[in-house]
Length: 300
Image 1 (cartoon, rainbow, N blue to C red):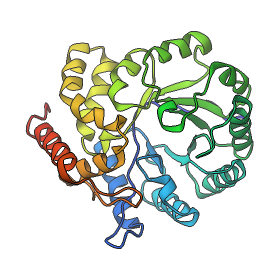
Image 2: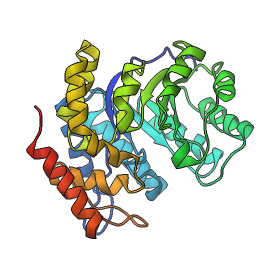
Image 3: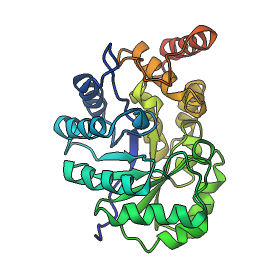
Image 4: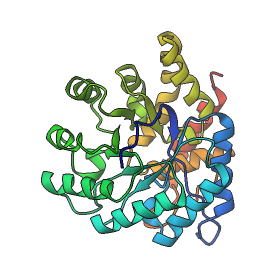
């Protein structure tokens, strides 16, 4: 229960879960999406995150998706499974099962629906961490989950050896510097909101958990490579081209928008499960136009 800090860095797409015409999980299509991303050169992958529609799947379906991912791309890049459950006991059980299936790490969210007090949030993360030896990335997304992982909580959790990383999706990039000033290198930091990715990476994040990489992997990888190489002029050019699409990741319909972009780029299907519905009307036309404009002006 004392893993060394994993060498997680670079571009980790939050991979989509693909559905068939009857909205059953399409395992083969989901594996195809994952395999294509690995061929494109991504450095890791988050399975069953928000973009993977975690909370729209049954427990059995989630486990089947993880098993299929391990079979398709396990051992090629780190596979991090989202842990997004309604109860702490359910999250701990899922973490144990994910480890047995063979993923490489976990991305643990606060318990869904209930908004916890600070002590409840800390207890949730401690309990899940105690259920597994896998390295854990905490997911901080105050706009989506209505709770912020505050510094007191992170100070207390710093004694938990397998809590090793933070996916930071607060919309204020100053938090990256505050986290580094407070905790130095105790936690690996990942940019988690696509439209502050450049800021997070420049300010010290080691990687980017990305939604739009599903549609434009080459540009995502080039952006991170330019930052790593210190070529900020190239990074800014790529980021400015990418930004209209990256803003989609911060909208409430990010899953539908990303899957529609994925479909337009020939990389997946836009089907989603209710309560989500595919984009329609003016919103669909706007997203289609945005993606087609980006495709026509690709910088690579």
